Image (tube, rainbow over all chains, first blue to last red; front, top):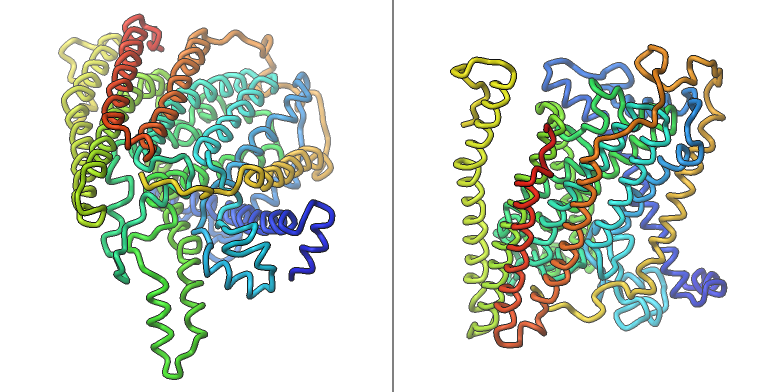
Length: 477
Length: 138
C-alpha cells in the first residue's frame, strides 16, 4: 500500500503526512460513524428502561422488540416541516445548533478508545500492509499509532476547553429564538453549566494530580497495574483512580449530569415550566442537531469519567497478552504461528470493543436510570448544591488528594529497594487515604448537610404558613 | 506519577491535524443539516404558526425580557474560580513533575503554598456566601 501514500504525499508534503491524514479519516469514520449508529439505540434503550421502571412495555410497534423506533424517529424528524418563526435573529438562530454540534464532535477526537500500537507490533502491522519502515515503524517518522483520533499532550484540558464552547450555542439558541421560554432556558443553562464546570474541573484536577499529566494516555497509563512478569494480575482494578479519589469520582458524576443538562439538572429544558427551553422554536432536523449533540455529549462525559477514574479501556483484570499468545500458539500441536498474532490482536481489541463500551454503557444506564427515578431540582436548590455544597467539598477534596499524592511522592523519593519492593506500600497508602476521604464526606453529609437540609425545609414550611410544630416531611436519614 | 516519557504524544504539529479534519466534517454536517432541512417535508407557513410559541395564546409583549441580575453575578464568580483553577492545574503539573521532586523539600513546600492559596479561595467563598451573593430565593 506504500504506493498510495507515495502518490498522495506528493500533494501534502511527504507520504508520512498522507498516511496521517488517511489514518485520521479512517479513525473518524470508525468512531464518529459508530457513535452516530449507536445514538438511535441509546434513545430506544432510554425509552425501554423508563417504561420498565414505570411498569409498561414501552415502544414495541416498529420492528421486533421495537428496535426500529430510534431510527424511525430520526427519519420522521427528517421529513417534518422546518419552521423559522418570525422575529428570530436569523443568523444566530441558524448558527446556534452548529455551535452546539461542533464541540460535541471535536471532543470525540480526544477519546482514548484503545491502546497505542508501537514497537514490534507496529513493525508487524506495517509489514502486513506493506508500508515503508522508514515511514511507519518503531524507528520511522510515525512510531506510535493510538486508538484515538488524536493524542495531544494537553488532552484533558483540551476536552474541557472544547466542551465548554457548547454553552455558547445553547445560550445563543435561547436568545436568538425570540421566545420567552427559550430565553429563560438559555440563561438558566449557561448559569448552570458554568457553575458546575468548577466542580467538574476540581474533580478532574484530582485525576491530574494522581497521574501527573494532562495527557489522556498518561492518565490511563498511571492506572495500569504492574505485571512483574506474571501472566495475569487479578487485582489490577485497585489501581484505578476511583479508589484513590472516590469523592472526586462522585463529584465528577454529579457535575457531568449538570453539564449535559440531564435529569435531575434539566432545568434548561424543563417541560412543565418552559415547554422545551432553549430549543422550543427549533423543529425538524434543526431540533435533531440539539438532540444528537446532547447524546454525543453524554457519551463523551461517560468516556472521560471512565478514562479519568475507571482506567479507560483497561480491564479490571490485567493480562499479559504476549504471554497468553505464546501459550496459545504452543497449544495447537503443529506449533502454528497463526494463533500468536490472533491473540495479540484480540488483546488490542478487547479494550475498544468490549471493556470501554461496557464502561460507557454503565454510565449511560446511570443517566437513564436517574431520569426515570429522580425529580427535577428547583433552580435555587440547583445553585445551592453547586456553590454551597459541591464547591467547598471539591476544594477540601482537592487538598486531601494533594496530600495523598504528596505522601506517594515522599514514599517514592525515600524508598529503598526500588519501586518493586514498595509497590504494596504505595497502593495501600493511596487506598487508605481514599477511604478516609470518603468517610469524611459521609460524616460531613450525616452531621452538617443533613441538619442544614432539615433546617431549610423547616423554614420553608414556616414560610408557607404551616404551624411551627408541623412535622417536617422528607427528613433524610 | 509515572515518569513522563519524552514524545509520548503525537508531536504538536501532527496532533491537531485530525482535529482540523474533524472540525471540517462537523461544520459541514451542522451547516449542511441546517441548510438542507427546509427542503424536506411540507412547508406551509401561516401567521399563527410563525408566532413565538407561548402555549397557544397570542404573544404578549416583547421576548427580549430582562433577566435576574444574579445570573450575571454567577458569571463573574465563575470567571474568578475558573482562573484560580487554571493556576491549580499548572501547580499540579509542577508538583508531580519527577524532575522537580528531586529537589529536597519541593513537594511539601509547594503543597504548603497551595494550601494557603486554597484557604484564601475558601475564605473568599465564605465571604460571598455570607454577603448573600449565592442566595437565589431572596
